[in-house]
Length: 116
Length: 111
Image (spheres, rainbow over the protein chains, first blue to last red):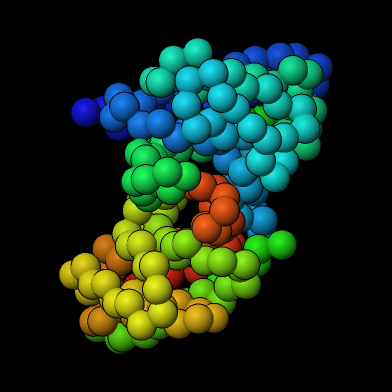
């Protein structure tokens, strides 16, 4: 199993550009999520999904869009990049333990994004 | 609002010098408390889940404990390879798998 994979590893954008960060998992996990990690602020939840076709907002969703058309993939779209979106982005997934409960999350290697 | 506070922010130890990291939390209806290890330039790696006060889990030189207000990660006789940032996170009973993370403790173990 490759686990959780993310592409690209590094990206530089100009203000106003759009792009998609890719995330895939091969563990058949129902739950997938996106976090951003900034110095002094810890990991913060952007969006999450409990299954194909179902997404919801996390703590810091503004400026980001997600969709979940398959169990395996959960792309994160930046609609119009801003310098405040410079960060390291992590995708994570977990399996269902029971109704509304899940096991521990497994994280991908991250995408380091710089917006100029 | 759920809150997780980790202390200290940074800790330097000599190889073999045991110590503890603290994670204080405020959450309405704790479902689980999670410890992760993060190496520079990598994603967090899962270590432990604790579900109820009094629970303890061990893995090699690490032992995690949980009370109603805080969790400790005890490191016994650490080695340089234990150097990393240790992250604590909580999930609430009503929030599925949503995690609230602390800012982490950066541990350095000198040979």
